[in-house]
Length: 411
Image (cartoon, rainbow, N blue to C red; front, side, top):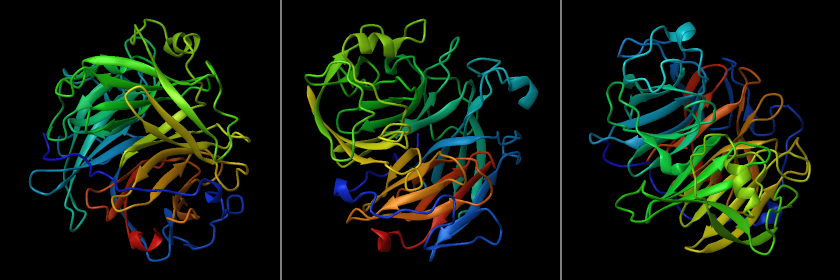
């Protein structure tokens, strides 16, 4: 396995009432962004990008890069190289048409979902090696970095799917799947691990979804434990989607006896037991003692919410850091990442040309980048271990990009 997981993020705090203090007009490029002459990515002044890889390119194992890149994490290798682990959000049933016969290691011979690996030179951004790691899964959407490797999550709960899988950043070829049953079977989106005790937070991309955490019995055996669903103290079964910015509630956790039901009904079982509704939970990340998560269609106008969770053994506090009241300002936040050194960044999955946006230390929102290539979503936002490079995908365009610039000046 690679020498270390993605770097831990520094403390970040934002005044909730000022989060949406600055907006953009509809689908325009926005103030501070300069047009890309190549028509790929409009960027904030002082920043530049490099294309690391394109869908369809030949990898070092002889296979082609799959389309629809999605969730990613960047690990540091033993030799200092960056290892980028990348999902591909492709459903079961497409393998034969897209890739031909499945490798013998495939989880499901019909599954087209996958995880690929890029080994990147930190100085030049040259790709030293690229290969397939996980095959035969379905709709690998997001996931998360962990001390044990990349956690890849399936957003398809049909058939034998709907699980999370552990992938080794050191794998220089396809490996047999390592399924994490303890993390449950549902329409997974993303995962975030609290490193000190191996607690894992998990989002569910459903309009009536829940928010989960997995608590190991012993952190040294991180996948043996219990799955729980979040509930609001004194308000069993409440819907968090109407909450506005600044709303704050105490939460508790409900044990789930059967985390891998045959039917896609884990959320219904959880709600009957009192779990809260989180409307299309997607991005999640852990940063210096707090968990940040998005509800892509929550909020007063359905334009999204961003929550901050401070959690303890038995419960904690959930706060709405942002809730869109104008979809021209924030339109369906998806993946989130905290930069080592400070600053929260998120990508959108709304209508028109989507934006990559950030938040300064004083709570001011700014546009960092805009997808100029298409109206496809931006995905997989993550930082290099040193915090100097931001990695992101243009999903429908099949591009994986590295962005560099004066991030510290934006904090």
